[in-house]
Length: 116
Length: 289
Image (cartoon, rainbow over the protein chains, first blue to last red):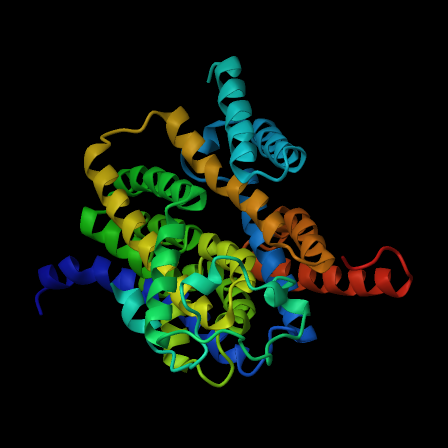
């Protein structure tokens, strides 16, 4: 194969190996590890606690250390927006959409005030 | 549609007819702590396949929803990032559909943009994706019909495990009759993945340049939506404790151990939440709802 052909296919090799395989391997391992575990088992409560903590970790990283356009905003504003959104969600009968709207309102409002 | 083919994998005599399932199954609405798994289903449908098909369609319809719109918006934001990072349209689409977990997609995009080699890129993405294993482990016992669901159906369905679909499934599937859960989930997940991919492609082509404030607003949608919906999906006080501990530990480990942060957050946070809740109950503080 010539170097050109390899260069053309390289991004796809990256996506299949470093993308698809590197993520789906964990999903397949999850299916295999679930084995005969039952929905009401104590072990599952524990596994769910680990999964929930992991997802929560992803959430706070997305807010505190974002990538892309959010990087330009002050960390305090992002935390205030997310906290306002969550409190609004809790107060307003746990309507997810209201929490999201409240958070966006604080983010965009604060962004305009700062004049970034 | 793919979901329909896989949905017909149930050879269960007691799948539900459309009419009998308008309301969630009362016995199964108490979440994972009730031991209803072995109870027989009290309904007799005309054919199991028709039941599965209807559930897959209902799942597809459920994908047209607030979580669906928020994920679409988040991927519109990602399309801008992919374009700026120099990915082609085909690469962007292939990555969205094959990886199907936005945080991992962002990691791989960064790796490809900076020209990192295959091995370090694989390691970075694999480390960012460890969470998918406990998430899948927690979902599978809810999804399957013990002794009837084929493992390769679960392996196929597991590809759609990502935060949005997982939170949605953990919150809604336990209220559905057991044989309905896999078809419903596949209908939901296939619709979500295909519509998100299509809209990502469209916005890659159409949106020349996203104004920073719009892009920032789109990027904030995801964590805030996850924050609220993870709370609704938390059925027990252990889950809520794990969420609060994880929110706090995530950034700490990100600073202290950036390579292993999410793994550590999960294991340490999960143990603290589980152990702490056990201890609190042992000491008699508060009761399980």
